[in-house]
Image 1 (cartoon, rainbow, N blue to C red):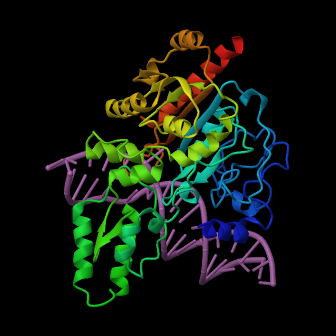
Image 2: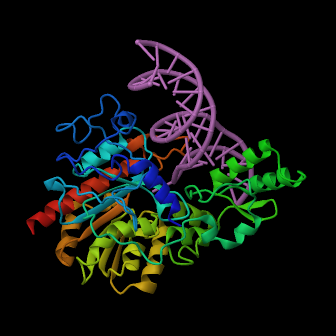
Image 3: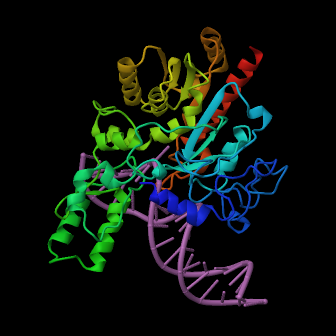
Length: 404
DNA sequence: AGGAGGATGACTAAACAG
DNA sequence: CTGTTTAGTCATCCTCCT
């Protein structure tokens, strides 16, 4: 099960201790592999990274994306030191797609108190890939994963598919689960292309089928028959309880799940909070979606006294509200629009509940994501620019709580 | 709900220049 | 032989129109 990770670790990461290690320098710069850095994020001309005043090092995007460390692996845990202004309260946790247009992560980092992102591909914890960057001021020692450990291969996750899996399909894991699923016509075309072959299909057909399967994360469900995952299967891979999104339209379920956190990855990062808040915590959840952060905290056994959740989508609020009513005893306060969360409103809220322990959220990625063919406009895009509200709200919360 | 619709960034191996 | 450039490969929390 851990062979994949071990291989990558031993073949790639052990040479110079590069991966997950940037503790050797006071300025948090990474060690080694200089020749690779210039191609990464923040390396383009005219873009000044948050650390530029102290260093010319651009922000690297490590490959493989293993973050600071991984569960049950012997990667050397890093010993990072945070900028003093980044240190809480509150703790904060921000997420977005790792492969964003150039300069985006440098900008995000600059607005979030110069903390370097932790890039993690969830394929190390899950049977599906999910490349994301996380900026947070949480401790990174003594993390622990959710148990039981989720399946890391397609066969472990979906036993029945093995019966129909052709030998020439080498996939062990799925690509990123997206907001749209493949349409029936594609599946039909694949079936048709394979059915008319006698014996193993020719190279050309294999290539076409494999490309299509990879693109849509399709699995084998019958003889020459592929299909996209069902919503409950996506819920399972992403770490949500069964039927979490049930009750809304299929299109909405796929959209919301595709936009969601990977619960196990986030929970791994948040696990350090468990011992720090034995009596529970107050959470400000921005861009909550279907409640990936809340589910992660719940599965960690962390009690949520009050959650102020901001989510624009009515169906997502419905999903979170129904889950909350079934599982929680604390208070859920729902707000639709981040723009309506003014500093006055924040202040009265903070005074009422006694402050937030955690500000968590991932702002809209659709103007950053490579899939967007029409409006990949970067951080200033129509939706992705809402990131600045995350920064604004975090800044406000920090300054209010500083005065307390 | 179905169908159509490229671009960007990262990686890798090959080609290239010194 | 070594470091650099180039071209091919791959993946991507998607939007618009019907």
